Image (cartoon, rainbow, N blue to C red; front, side):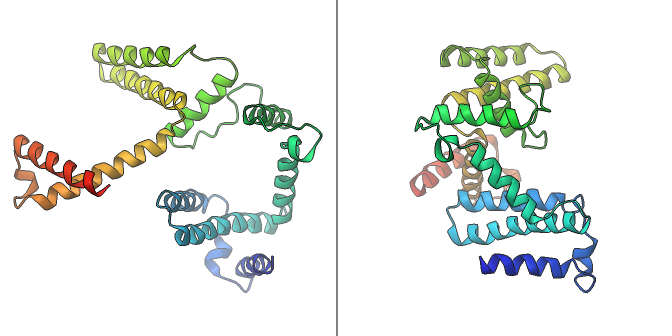
Length: 253
């Protein structure tokens, strides 16, 4: 743990009167966005299966944790030891099948226990859907809402019903008259799609991310295949080049 101790000391020095003016000027709010960006960069490294990149990006995430902790310490609020203590106690409490007497290897029961124990800890949360951060990306937020509601018993009987709901939402979108109605119905389509993903154990955020990357790859290939200004292509030319790009990139995948 020597390197971790050195890192904590380095951040303490950077925030000290003789440290860095930029670091000293930061507050929880001024570096709020940094936490999000560093987390996304770490996730990107995971998606790319780039271990060296992941190692570096996890360091940047850790920097945010330590910097927030040092800011709090400077304000006499809490310190990194308090953060570690709370996390350690939480992990032990929520794993009675490891640290307690309740022995089970059933992952479903483990998750049920986790939610039950979490609810005991968060007594201020009166509603089932309380505690889900609204700052999450919309697809992930939707997935968490759906999972919590389903665990509480608000669930379709089978996947066919979920798909029927999806088709029904498409029909309602087609029948919508105003832009506000269309926006609302499109939201319902996305919501039902997320639940189709949930029923199939698919991460919708990851699925869409892969679709985005696939589109970029094919569109880039389409650009390479034409000697024209891309804005001047006809629909038919676009269609033909897109088909070729799909075949080529499909072989590369």
